[in-house]
Length: 152
Image (cartoon, rainbow, N blue to C red; front, side):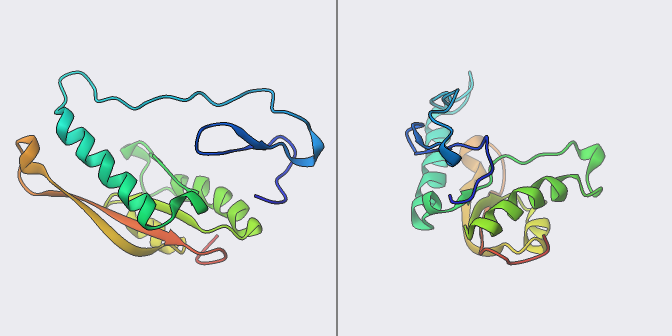
């Protein structure tokens, strides 16, 4: 990304520093690389299937070329107060300034917020909950936002 303020560092998919902006030299810290593992007692095959689905969607929609928003949560007691929108807007403003599209997979409750912020539905990832002993399907809406779209 171009034009980042001092202190921001970008990393490649392997976690290696790509560049330190503004001639700052090497980063003072490197991100930790962790392999996500299923929690104890989880259905390992289902866990692997779900995360393979996420990876496939990321590849299909070229998420590596986009700002990826991941795991944005607010306590249910604070829903509807604009907290998540405020957090996301600040990040989208940087993406807009850089001309970088954004990518995410949204739970049904959050998708309307993302649409208001300019994200468009591009795909769906469905998981059959019967494999976990429950009824119905879990659905994630894959969304992409072009720079400058929506209410930031």
